[in-house]
Amino acid sequence: MIDEVTHLDATGQAALVRTRQIKPEELLEAAITRIELHNPRINAVITTMYDDGLRLVSGEPREGPFAYVPFLLKDLGTHCQGARLTEGSRFLADYRSDHDSQIVTRIKQAGLIIIGKTNTPEFGILGTTEPERFGPTRNPWNLGRSVGGSSGGAAAAVAASFVPMSHGSDGGGSIRIPAACCGVFGLKPTRGRNPLGPDHGEIFGGLVAEHALTRSVRDSARLLDATSGPDVGDPYWAPAIDRPFIEEVAREPGRLRIATSTQSPTGSEVHPDCVAATADVARLCHEAGHEVIEGRPDVDPQRLSKTFDTIWRASIAATIDGWAVKVGAAPRSDALEPLTWALYESGKRIGAADYIRAVDDLQAIARQVGEFFRDTDVWLTPTVSQPPPVLGWFDWSEDEPMRGYRRDSEFCPFPPIANITGQPSMSMPLYWNSENLPIGVQFTGRFGEESTLFRLASQLESARPWSGRLTRLLRPESE
Image (cartoon, rainbow, N blue to C red; front, side, top):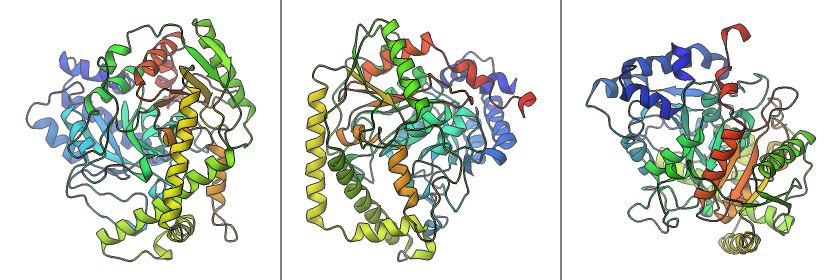
């Protein structure tokens, strides 16, 4: 019974409770049992909030589209009142939030039961989840492989059926990268679609968006309906939508013009498996009736890398200085990982004028990419440049503390463009290689047009469903 329930998506689990086929307490116990059984090996959940969940289940009746469905929060940036927030760092010790972020408020209003927090690299810096404080999260498809990052714990938790969906955030691919590595669905919504308040109007110069990793397309759409929309004081927000996102899931996408490319925007090498996955999904799109052409935005790779790097380093330094005020301690090298300390020191050396010029460059790149989408509906690429790396591949060394950061830029060249432009972008689990490792493909849509992506994703999910693969994860006979 536990396996039957935990392998369902969130919509399915909510329906079981709503039709009284399962009690809320039973659904919660099923998730807790799954976590307790498998998390010691996977290490996706680093803070449990079971007692909070049990109190909510036994309290006032829950309402919303996901009433009583268990849920996990990423342990980065997002506050949940009374819960520990560490951002994967020793520097924060066991800091506890004194309020809810607005997206957490909306997650609770959707009826979800938060039962814990997921692992993340220190301050979300890398595209792998191997913080020194908590240790690596292991990929449910191969325990020796990375889950990606920075929402790696979230992706692993969904892939291992701990919960049907889990909160994530994305500043350079941090939802899509782990979705690709763990074989789940991950959408980064349009800039301003979900609120970042009350603590932020924007994060990292507008690069960061929040949403979730999910088992199904419909769960992603329905959750975005529940959480999206402007909040008081937001500096800007995404364009209004024509209809609820969940209604897009049932609509035909029409004949789309899909451009595809496997050439890295920064010139880094792309693994043959990622090329093969993209070509395979391009054929699938063609068979579905779409026009598929070769094409990509004309962006200067050096300008792209320099602009993103400047924003990233300066923002890491500002983040750490902000936390220093909250915890009442000055940043120091023995409380931060060597890579983090190196980025902090270099970020402090970036002047205000340099940062403003980088923002100008970022916006210029966004206009270049926007021109490409005048006659292109969707851009198809690999999500990452290689299959899930072995654990330790990103590790620093005494003579090269920045090695992980360099390797991160090689591993994740495709996702950051959508963070720079603010466009919606999703990773889909439509291909597995000969080693039975998931190889994600990325679809990026026009600014404000998640609707197009949801329609296309639903069509491809129907053509090549992946839920059967997920239900076979961690069966007793395979352990």
